[in-house]
Length: 201
Image 1 (cartoon, helix red, strand yellow):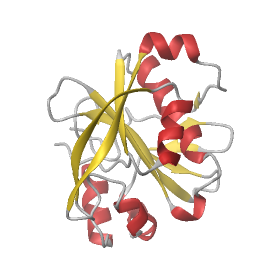
Image 2: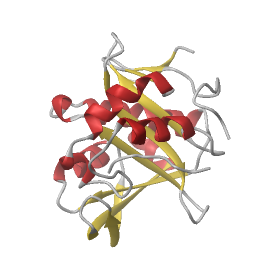
Image 3: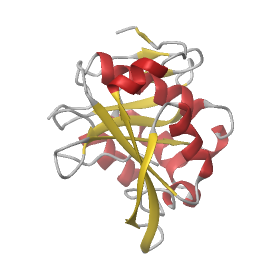
């Protein structure tokens, strides 16, 4: 499932968003100068068609709007996923859902970087951050029924299937079935065997 936060507190420069390092990736706060790279990657119908929030086509103006409001909501932590040379690969983060009763994880990876395990590596880092630094009790997530690769990412990170629901997909102009998943802190603690992320800032 893709992430595209648009919740109305922190600016994109907020120091409460740390920099996380994994074996191959650096996850950092989004910045306005990332707009061009984000727009290039997100102007991809295959990504938009798996998202409940990303339009298609996707312009630099869309990217600037998203980047300007990232991490402004209490309880939100959105990271750009980059390679060590700061090449933007995708994004991953968490934030409160509309009902205010739960926190949802979302992510997207640019098509040139598919099939390399980057989504799983990034999601594990953000899950660790959510359950340690943010002390959350549970996370929810979703993925289209027709997106088995995204489902495998969630399952490898310990998420458990809960139900199927219909959600509107802007790029399709219609609704599609979404598998819903949940991961509780106690399950994460019992299953966690992956290499931990390292907070560097």
